Every structure is written in structure tokens, then in C-alpha cells.
Image 1 (tube, rainbow, N blue to C red):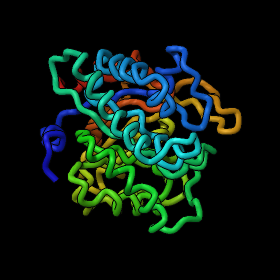
Image 2 (spheres, rainbow, N blue to C red):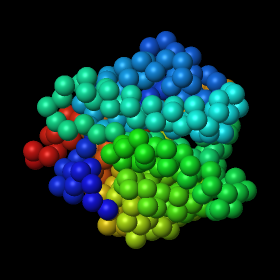
Image 3 (spheres, helix red, strand yellow):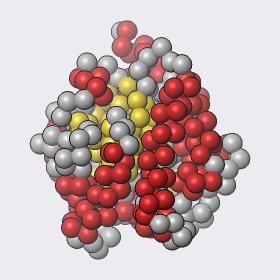
Length: 305
């Protein structure tokens, strides 16, 4: 699939992704402890989301990932919102990122990736880190396709099919994204060289090798230590540009709904990720603007070397 975003990737240069939306909103004083997480602010405080995107653009990010990770028709319905209003909020997530890009006044192209989280994110019980929900591929495709249609109609530059825990959901997403007219990247959440459900990464990435709609593959929402091997495997299995945006290295406690441990993300390591094939590089949960600035600087030095 050809697009301006795909063409930018084809140049071989690295694009810097943003960091965690939730930690940036939390730092601004917003309570995200309910089941909708940052998606709640699409209805209640959309300006805060724009400000969070803007902070990352000003920190050096080239790509903003929208606040729609946990925004679903089913999740909004539990709050009493109908499908029309839910669709408006999904589209708004793209508009807010576009507004931040306009306000950033950057001297470089800025891009918007529309986030589509896994089925487990809608459940809000940590099951995106386990997968294997007991649903069929058809069930999962029916869940994902309507939301992807709305997001694609809002005209993001790319769809971010992210934090995918297993090959079943990846297969359903690859079916659901077909024919939408917007390119996508597919990124798994992994642990110890396997998907969260325990499948070999070679097998997982290979699913997307011949998917024309998917222009990049990789990992996110994982430990930084799991990135190097995953990048090499993704590049080898697909021949496509690789996306890599791990967490800070802290661990999410789903029961307590809080983070434990200490950061282990060293921004200088991204130069090795780039050498192995990563072209979309940033951070996920607990990675803030300061770290994104350091990652952008490290990648800029690597491109000049």
C-alpha cells in the first residue's frame, strides 16, 4: 500500500514515536483509574489530550498515537453512550492529534497514528497481557472492524494495531484492516522472546509478511530488554520496517491498577534497534517527553554516523 506515511518509511530514516498518553495525562492531574482509562477524557477533557500530544511533538516526536487505545463501542456503551456518540469520540481522537500537530509549528512532517488496542483492553482487566480470550477469529474480527472503519474514515496517516497479545487476535486484525484505505502497523506485546500467549515471535510476525495493508511490524508495551531480539526477528520474518516502543521497564499491576519497579529504558540503546531494522521508535507506558527527547537525539546522531 502506498501513502505519504509509507513513503516516509521507505526512505529508510527513523521516525520518532511519542510516549505514554496515560502518564502524561496523569502528570497533568487527571484521574485515569476507571475502566475507560485515557479514553474517558475524549468526552470529559479533550483539550487535555491535545496538550499531551503537543508536549510529545515539542519533545521531538514525529508521530502521535491517538488516545483511542481503550475507546470502543462496547466500553462507551457501558457508560450509557450510543453508537453515534461513540463514533464521534473515536473520530475526535484523530482530530485532537491533528490539532496538536498544527499547534506544534514543527520544521518537519508530523504524523498521526490511530490506536486500536486489543480486545483485552476493552475488558480492562489486564487480559491484553494474556490473550486467548476464548473467542473465535470471526468474533474478534466483528469486534475490531467497526472501530477500525470509524478510525480510518477520520483519515489518520496510519492505524496502530497495538499491544496484540497473541496470533489469534493478530489474524483477526489482519482480516479486519483489509480494504480500509489506510496503512497499518501491527505490534505485539511480548515477554521473553514470545507473545504474551507464548507463541514464537517468528511465527507471530510471519502472519503479516504478505499483508499489503501492513507496512510495519514490531513490539510495544513490553520490557526494553525484550526489544532487541524482537526487532531482529521481525525484520527477518517480514522484511518490513520494524516498530519498537517499549514501556519504561516498570511492571503493571492489573489488580492494583498501578506500576511497580524502576525504569530500565536507556535511550542510547535505540541506536542498536535502528541498526537492526527499527524505523518507528518511541515509548509506551511510563515513557515521558524527556525520554522521547533523548531518543530523538540518539536517533539523530545515529543517522549522521
